[in-house]
Length: 219
Image 1 (cartoon, rainbow, N blue to C red):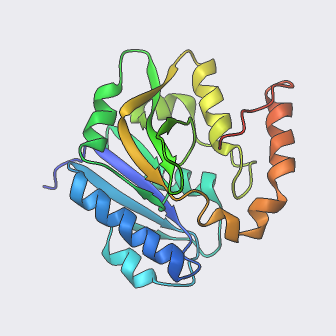
Image 2 (image 1 turned 90 degrees about the horizontal axis):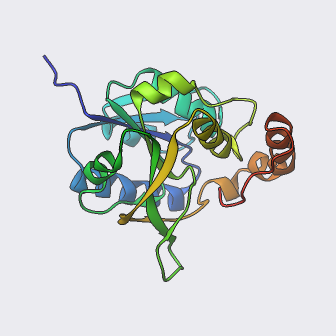
């Protein structure tokens, strides 16, 4: 009988070119080196390249026939997750030693979501960012809050909306400043035109949903 993993890492992919692929390989290499007691779930959003490599380097591989976007990709992966915690990650990050275990240890009784400290590749300092590039939630809280709202098409503000819902349910968002993760920010998003096109519409969807409250802009 296969041992149940403590953490399910859910990672949507859209491998559009060799640059994204190399970042993805670096990301997966760091996860394999610095992580334990986890399963790796890839949600392939119709990548035109390197599908076989993706299949060979994860525990669960799900292939979409089209790019469903970030939020639906997270939902798809979470539906098959077996871990007590779910960690949602972009495929353009580089993790550090003990990152996964330290994220789990950060949770307290009223903690809803835990984030790491981060810096983009060209930045000098690590800083806390409550953003969707890497975050962890207990499976029981995920089940309580519900899935990502898929009205935020492709990307932009689906993560912000979810974190607002977590806070509205009475839970805290916590950053562990000792977990340092490099993020090659927007490596894929900047190459997907739909992401650029829907920023304003998703921004307005968020404001309408949350009664005029506008989101912070560090997603």
